[in-house]
Length: 265
Image (tube, rainbow, N blue to C red; front, side, top):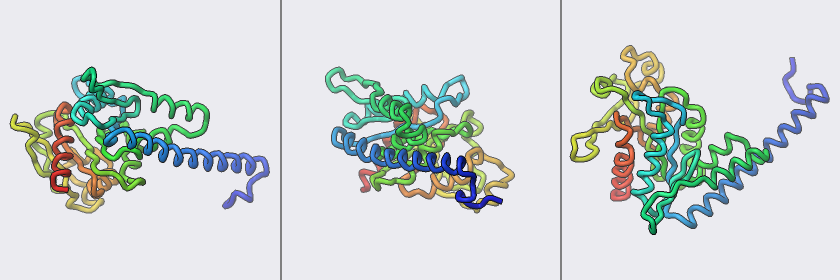
């Protein structure tokens, strides 16, 4: 049995060595790009808000996640005029002259060119965008996580030690589901969004270990999300796991938590 690369055939070993060298080069480029982009953006804006999620997920009413991400990014840009808002496909800047949000993608185009030129790979494309943000909102779909899971993981690493807030949002898709969230595995606290009577839930902590939570007979709303992901989102000090039924509420929920943090900080 082959247990070490030195025991491989010369041709295969040469191929592996080239692959390792390319990976090391791309990882080096990734680190340099993170530093360069972070420095440039923070030199021009008051902060960086990321809005991430799986673009292809379809919610009830045939609402595609891509449209939800675009809506949230646009609204957050309006509410945080000195910030730049970044998604996987574009970035948003508030134009004070026209009083409109401008949607562009030179940053994403540049990273895509680096991918096509083999300087970085597609995973690096996602990790670079997520790492430079010091605020972020993530749409946590119950399935088809793909690149959004990469961005969630990267943001939680907090490699620049500058993260202030990450709001991870899970949507319940019917009224009955929202009314029956308690299963005993997670502590859920209900909050008012505004004076309209609309609510959202904040998942503060998990109350049971992995075995009990995974095998919970209630199989409630949060059990549709991988336990390891839930545990990370709940335990990370700067992240909040939110549950709501209306994606239109996300910008107000984000702003409410952001304001509360800055007031108490």
